Image 1: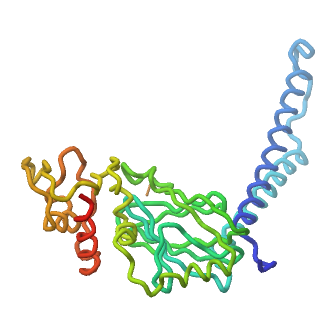
Image 2 (image 1 turned 180 degrees about the vertical axis):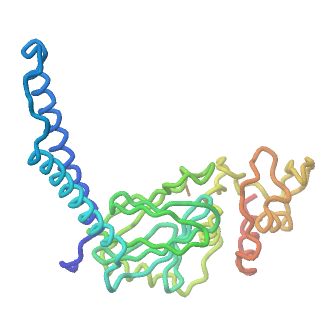
Length: 301
Ligand code: CUA
C-alpha cells in the first residue's frame, strides 16, 4: 500500500477516538466535581451561605476559553477527517455502483458488471453512486463510509481495502419491502487475482442469469420457486395466473408476450397477492438482452 495515503478507516477512527476521549474526560471530570461539591457543601455542614464572592474573572475566563479550545479542536480534526473522505487519492480505480429496488450492480470501465464489488487490495477505489429509482445509501462499515444515493444526483465515496477479504455492503436508507435484502460485499483480491478477474469473461456475451442479475431482477424474483418480493421465475411460463389489470382481476396464461410486458410495464398486469412495486424497465434494457431473458424464463417451467 502507498504509505502516505491515509485510509478512510484511519481518517474516521482518529476523529472518533479523539472526540470519544474528550467526552470521557469531561464526563468523569464533571461527574467527579459534582459529587465532590454535593458532599463538601451539603447543607448539614453549611446551614448558611458564608461566601461573599460575587464574581471571579479568572475562573470565568478559564471556563470560557478552555471549552472553546476543546470544541474548536474537535471541529478542526472533524473537518480534516471529512476532507480525507472527500479527496480521492490519485490513481484510484473507478467503479460505478448502481442501486435499485432491491439489488446492487457494480460496473467496471471495461464493461464487466458484477453483483459484488470486486476490488484490488491496497489500491484506492472511487465508487460513483447512482440510484435508478429511490433513495438508497451505500454503507461499508469496515471502511467507515456511508453516503446517500439520490436519484439524479452525482455522488461518490472512496476507500482502500487494506487486505484481501470480504467486507459487508449494506443499504442504509429504508427503500421499501426488500430493503433488508440489499446486502452484498466488497471482495478484495490480491492485485494480480483482481486483474485476472477483471479480464475474465470480458469479451463473452453475458448469459441470461447474469443479465437477470445485472438488471436487478434476482433481487426480487427467485429461480428456485421460493417466495421473495415478487413471484418466483420458476414454473411461471405456461401457467395460468390471476392478475390485476386496471383494478379488475382476470386470468391469463403466462406466455412470452406477458413476460415481456411484465418487464417493460410491470404495473399493467400484476400477479394477485403481490404489491405493484416493480419499477418500469421501458427503455432501460437493450432489445437483444430482453429477448435473451424472456427466452431463458421460458425454459424454467
Ligand atoms: Cu436500498 Cu434500502
